[in-house]
Length: 248
Figure (cartoon, rainbow, N blue to C red):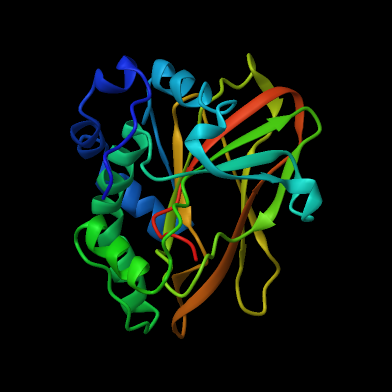
């Protein structure tokens, strides 16, 4: 992989992998199994959040810029990072993957899906790249007042890692109001269930990309999930999206 770009000295003040390792993963994986999502409290510091947000105006860090309204995705915009990723993001991606890989394999086994994920993120990316999925998918999203993100799934090719992470970079109540993270779950022959996930600055939410297993009275079945962001009522909201598979 290419050498990562530097964000700022703030990204170097903490061993990212060690910090991720100290999170309460037993509780996090339990929430993922029961709810399809889980909050990772204090994943980033305010300084790290501000350092990532400050990258948004500089297109040198990004491979593409998407205006949601042009594609019917909602209102707002986002930019996909280019390789090499900024170093903080380059460290976060494999550090989080290590802890989510076991959940992904267990879910696939429960749903009767034969795909298994290797222990290291580099090995999974190699699988993606050999299939032509070579474009990086971590992204930085920006919402202004009135913006929102329609319910969707981040599927970019044949190879999909079944979990992803979104990190709130802005401070609710100070930088923006509204703009809640929303997850919906469609179970067979039932109406959709909505989950609103409150986050503070630096908190992250890990969640199912596409589907997850649920234990029913007649065995395990798959439920389909979509995620989005409700309308921002004032201010400006930034989010870092960490997706573990690359895109075609």
